[in-house]
Amino acid sequence: MLLLAGLLAMAGCRDKTPELELVKDDYGVTQRINPNEKSVYLVFTGHYSTDDDGYFENFDGAAPVLEILAEHGVKGSFFPTGNCFRVDRYQQVIRDIIDQGHYLSAHSDRHLLLCSYGDRSVNLVTEDSLARDIQGMEAELEKFGLKKEQYRWMIPPYEHYNQFSADALRRLGYELANPTEGLVTGLDWMGPGEPSYHSAQQLMDNIWQFEQEHGLNGAILLIHAMNYPNRTDDDRLYNHLGEIIEKLREKGYDFKTFHDVIAAEQD
Image (cartoon, rainbow, N blue to C red; front, side, top):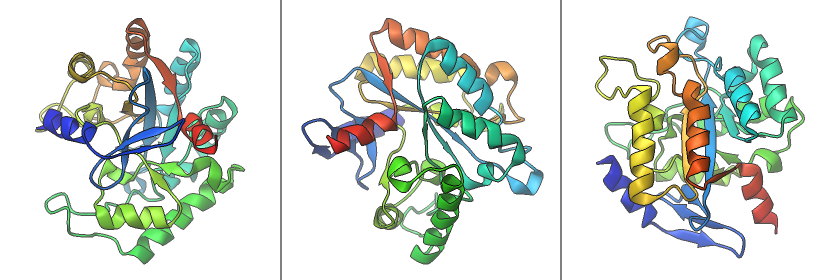
């Protein structure tokens, strides 16, 4: 089913300028960027669950991810929620993301679920409540000296949306991206015994199978920069990031960020 969805997404609508071609899903959300280029967009999301002081959801994987990226000379794109920006222990790592030249935007302010999983047509936010949430997100980003034109590409919370919420976010001035469908690395939060659990090895196998069948040109590859308590260190996908980068390079891919997308938009 996921691979079928991926094929449908790749066959979806395309927006093209001389320097930028965007492959979008049925809601107008970008899922591949310049599909004729052998470039992969590594994206890292995070959220801080305030009800348990970050026990389950956190941004604790960001620092080790930065170390791995630095070791391999790769830039990534980071999308923590506004909650992460308000946590004292993440102030330095957020500054490091900026100072080291990575892309930084956000993943909403408080990680709102925008529409129902059971019936995607059921809205769980109003346009006003979504606007208030985004205002909170913007306030946190701007505390770090960023302007909207620098972070206007974002990933919707939960990577789940419908036409109403996608359009509402665009009216607020955002361009939306989501992981390339058919890649299931975003399941790296589930623990053993859960219905959709995939081990880190199974998630990597999915990357290579997808690459063999469909290629990864312009793919948006999501990894959570989070230490979920239901997974061991070796089962955290980000701990295998170096291996993923090396193998992608062996296959001829390079790496880009949403800084490159914004630059192409301006050409």
